[in-house]
Length: 413
Image (spheres, rainbow, N blue to C red):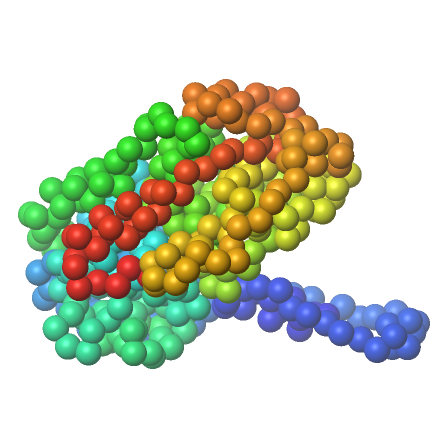
């Protein structure tokens, strides 16, 4: 058991499964001697590696920082934020790196929700060197490295890089990330000339992402849903995403200001994970607003956990984006030219479904109702389900047609 906890807290931190035969599990263990935990420091990158990485950054004309999943740890918020403040380098993040540094920073240029062809990739294509802090190849690639002609990459992480065709760094700084970025900041502070073209490019990228965020058509567009959710969630409010098309929209458009306030899975992307993760977040932070955002398909894969949330007396708002379809796979079918087949289904009456578990239920019937209904749901306390009809025609207009017109040679997938 002691070793299981040690493994769970290593990089990458995560669950450990223990399995015992029934007779062993039922046996009397007697008095067990618990081996006490002891403090330890992770290995630190050597000075030579930090010196070389710093020289690479100083030699670049347009360096850019990327923050990945392994850079998004509570203990790293201060050192990485300090690194950004001291170097004044522009940065973007992966989906699972969101929140490691305040997205309201004037250095933030966006989130890589797609692997290529999105507006944030204009900054990536412009860069001649990328400092990848905590990149983990378990995620969907935030950008695709070229065999030649693309930006050089410096990999800063706890562990050496997993080299793949799409990610093969030119240099690696391996050790405790917090110590590494602090050491780099000491070598770089006051020595980097700002990229004169980046502020204008950043404004153009963010303007495109904010386009139509207040559009008032109904059913509601993904951009408006993200905009309105951001309005009702305080800076420390926690949004837990299930897996579906809306995850791309929240990754691109939702600004995080506090670490670990937009929880999502960009690895195995398991449908049904949104509600259970929100339940746990609400248990850990009972005084903070917690919202689960689920598609109708993903919600129904674990909807019985509404009973758990009610039984535990949690304060939790569950937003169901209803398009009566498996929206992401339906979109992919369309993008790849396949017939629209097998992706639509009927749904229960979600309001009555919530009430059957002892929760409260609401249905949005006009775009201007979303913010007041969500505010009222949080104010009322308890478990509250809010059904929101969504217009996914924006998936094709923005994520296919608009991006493909920007870069005709890119496959948007």
